[in-house]
Amino acid sequence: MIGALYLAAIGFSALGVRGLVKRLSLPVSRQVILPVTVITTLLFLLVDAVGIWRGWFATPLSSTLLMLPGRGALNAGLPIEEIALLAALAALVVVLMSIRPFRSDGGGGKFTTRRVGAAIVFGVAVSSGAALASIGGEYTAAMAGLAAGAMLLTAPLLSRNQASRWSVAIFLVLTVVFDNIMCAAGLFHYASGPRSGVMVGYAPVEDLLYAAAFAMVAVQLTAAAQSANGRWWRLLLASRPVSWINTALPFAGGALAAGAGEAVGAWFLPLLLWWGVAYNLYLYGINDLYDLATDRKNPRKGGAEGALLKDGDLPALRLLLLFSGCTAALFLLVGTTSVPIACIVAVASATAYSAPWFVRARAVPILDSITSATHFVVPAVAGLALGGTFQQSWVAPLAAFFFWNMGSHVVGALQDVEADRKSRIATVGTLLGVRGGGWFAIGLYAVAGLLLYIQVEPLQRLGALLPLASIASLVPLIAGRPNHQAARAAWRRFMLLNLFLGAGAAMLIIRSLIGSL
Image: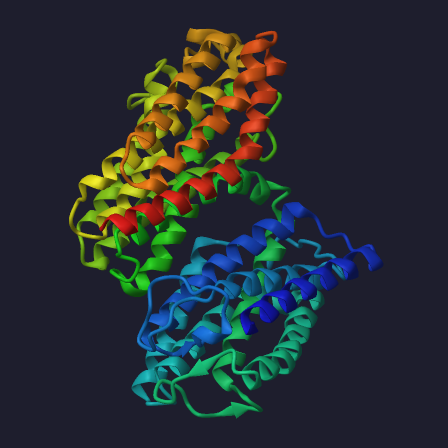
C-alpha cells in the first residue's frame, strides 16, 4: 500500500511539472529532456547500487511495490519506485534550467575528457581523504567525494550561468522539504555505522550531498545537451529505447527462472542496465554506423525505429560503442566466468551482424534473421547461466524464443525491401519478397508455438497461444497486396502486440521454468 502511494505521488509530481511547463510555455525540448533524464537516472542508479551493496541505505520491503533482485548488506535491493523518482527529479532539473534558457558561450556548457577525468580524480581524492581522516563513515566519505567531483565538473557552468545556480539552489530546498517527509514516513532506512550522524531534520546530511551531486550533474548535462544541436537525442535514438526491455527482460527472466536472482548480489542492477541499455547501444549503434548511407534513403528512419545520424555524430557514436563494449570487461569482478563470456558473445554477435570488416550477416539472407534472433536469446541464456547448472527443461522455451525472434526479424525486414533493393543490399526480405517473407515468418512462429505445445509443463503449453497471436497479425499481409504499405502495417501491428506478447510469454515461461526446477 505504501509503495503504491509513493509511486502515485511521484507520478502526480511529474504531472505537476509537466503542467508547469505548459502553463508557463517553457522551451522544454524532448531532444534535451529525454537524453538528460536517461543519463542522469542511469548514473545515479549505479550510485544507488553501490549504496545498497555496501549497506548505506535501504527501503523496507513493506514500503515498495516491487524490489529488484540483488540484495545488499541490509538485505534489501533496489525499489522499483527509485527509478521513477530519479527520472522525475532529472526532468525537474531540466525544467528549472529552461526557465532561463542556456546560451552557450563556448565554455561551461561543453564536456571535455580532461574535465570529466579531473572531476573523477578530485572526487576520489576527497572521498579517500575523508575516509582516512575518519570524517563520518563510508557513506559520508563517498557522498562528499561525489559532491566534490560534481562541483569541479560543473564549476565553469555555475560561475557563468545564473540559471544553473538557481536550479541547484531550488533543487536543494525541495530536497530538504521532501526528503524529510519521505524519511519521516519510513520510506528509507539508514545504517548508523557508515554515516556521520549529522541530521537535517529527519534526513541525514549525506542525502543533501547526494542531492547536490545529482543537481549539479543534471544541470551540466542539460547545458551540454542544449549546446549539442540535437546530437544527444540522435545518439539516444541510436540505442532504440523502445527495445531496451526486449533484452533486459529476458536477462532478468532467465536469472529468476534459474533461481539465481540473488546470485550476483548488488551486481544484478548493473548487469540489468548493461543488458538493457549498453548492449542495445552497441547492438543498434554499430548497425546505424555502418548503415548510414542506407538509412538516409529509408523514410522510416529518424524516429523511434532508428536514428538518422549526421556526420558530426559519428565520432561520439564510436566512443559510445567502445565504451559500451568495453564495460562488459567490468563483469569479470562478478566472480563467475559465465557473465563476461555471455557479454562478449553478445558483443561479437552484434558486430557480426553489422560490421563489414567482420561477417556483416545483415546482408546475408536467412543468416541475418538467425543472427538477429541470437541477439535476444543470449541475454536469456546469460540470466539462466547464473544458476550454474544447465537444465534440460530450458531447451524448448529457448528454442521457441529463438524462432519467435527470427520470425519477428523477418517481419521487420519486409518493410525495408524497397529501400534495401535500392541500396543493393540482400536480406531475407529481398530474397523472399513481402508475401513469401510473410509465409516464412508464419512458419517460424508456428515452429515456436509447436515447441511449446508439445511440452509437459501446462504453462509452457499455454504459452503456445502467444505465437498464434503473431500469426494472426500477419494474415492481412499475406491475404492482401504484397507491397510496402502492407509490410509497414504488419510491422506496426507487431510493435503494438510485442509489449503484451513479450510480457505474457515472459511471465508464463518463467513461471513454468521455476516450477520445473
